[in-house]
Length: 333
Image (tube, rainbow, N blue to C red; front, side):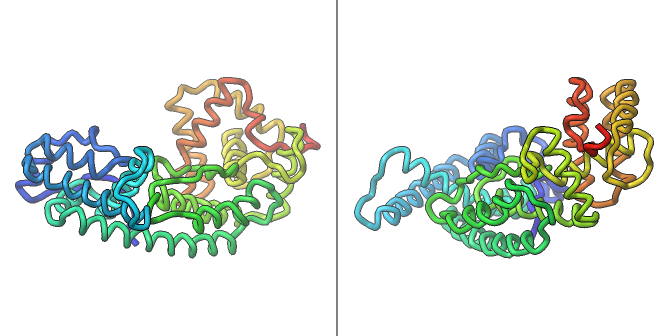
């Protein structure tokens, strides 16, 4: 499947080239992609008023049709809140279809080429495909699960995600996202909603499982146990993303001068890291964290976590709480 890459690619066609110079892409919102992209194109004069009016009529007809389906053919009207939700579901399907073009210019070309009903139908098919792919990702996430006892992780992997997928209403409420999980991935899912959110969550989780599983399960189990113990939690309640904990331990160990890839952290490592970090400006600290991660591994997912890890370390150092975000063996505290 094509990845969702949000960028405006190089445009060779004269019409698109002229448009790209006048478009203000800051006005285009991925949470409301179809409408804001169309609105910006109308503002720039790429589409005329007649085209805009026709698109709005098509959206109105699509909503009327979905309301009829929602009520089982018994009514052509619903409460305003319900109508808003159904309309958001229609827009979500349109957004998904356009996002898979992976550039603003290609999405605009698609809007020009196809009317709303056709885009909506194709968006529905993509959403259905994403649901099937998410089921496959769930199976993979479970088969690569981390061998550690953690209540939030287990609850998420054994129940919550399955519930997300199988209770997902791809027809009437495709835009909705259940974010009840107490176990968040390091990178998060940004502004994604609906099944796109679930798919990204699972992709992140699989990447994190893969990395953590490179280490001795007993070492990871001890790391999580010590972290829970230091915070007064139950032995199986880490209270943190396990992958992030491993990465923070490795990063702090490297910054302290231990140039290896071990996850074990001693108290002196924290002290040495704090002394070094306090001498650095924000830009220098950010660069050091990036260097640490590059030394630790060439894993692409880990590289993407650089800013997240840097922010956590930066905040902890400024508040004299670095030891609180890492796991130090209980016999070394």
